[in-house]
Image 1 (spheres, rainbow, N blue to C red):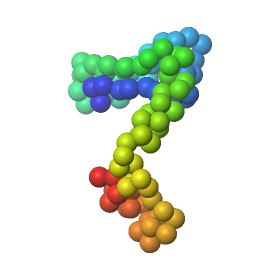
Image 2: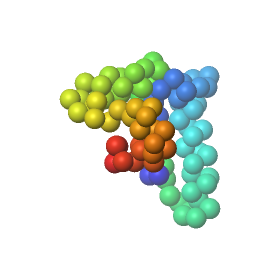
Image 3: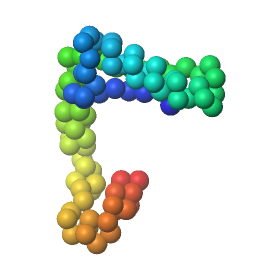
Length: 91
């Protein structure tokens, strides 16, 4: 947990650009400091406007990868193997 990346619309919560990243860092550090005092967490986050569409950008990049269709999970596969199919198809 030394580095945390925030992206997507939910990461835009708060009254200003840095309120959510700052709060997340403070809360994660509070949990970590119970076991490793002094450990610092670096929260990486683009500005609020970019954060709002990072998930779409990542999905677009994934969809453009030639082997992306190999990772698709059909309903039949999910019914047969359950949630464990995700670890089989996307190691």
